Length: 325
Ligand code: RIB
Ligand code: CA
View 1 (cartoon, rainbow, N blue to C red):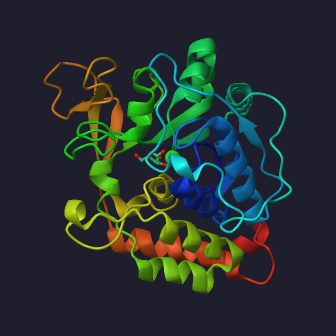
View 2: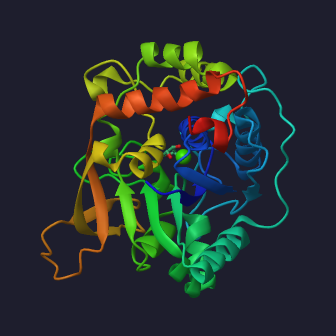
């Protein structure tokens, strides 16, 4: 698999932290930078958390850009774990990474234009509300030519929502942005709750992070054991999802997933705003431009996640060269 140029747009966020660390431990991915958006927590906390995670990875070459402080139109809502705010010192020590100058939207625009010029398109892993990406596409439509795909953790189709009974959080937090991105014409891969709920990480998996993953694994162990995401009533068994990491696994091991083409859309206003719908059979005579990822190999995904985090347990701090081994 050739090296993939990737931007992660993120609202860290406990599962965002796992996704970012997984990406930085994966030699298949050339992570060009993080564009940060308000979502799980307010923007300032999300930026601070993103800087801490990059510092934890040892990859101080990866820039962190602050982006949109809130949604395009609707009132602002935060994540279920918003009280986390900035990751505490006992979870992730304060590092030395500071955010880069400039706005995240400008970073996305410049990177996409360079990608278009070079002919090597960039992938955007969108693991928070889609505000930054929607702004980039609205303000500078030409950037679509430099974006190969937007892999978006979000939406719920056959599954019920979890932020409301009908809406997944990333879409709920900025439904207008989601609609703009889904209709942009850029190839979108939607990774909904339908799929992320199939892979549940248990205490034993988090212990493997801690046993094998060095300081990064220890931090994830603390974060995931403190902010318990399990829900036996909902899932019928122990464990909880690490939603955002599925986007990274999709890039590394697409064979672990099943997907279908569909037309997708979003309810942007009213009581059911954030509700996502899919037309898998072109009943509306609209082109099925989106890819919806419907299934994941739970064991394969979990083992991949644990294996990549374990690379931080090697003696030398991981970097693109050493991780290739
Ligand atoms: O619904 C799950 C998504 O919302 C994840 O990206 C999580 O980090 C939150 O942003
Ligand atoms: Ca997220």
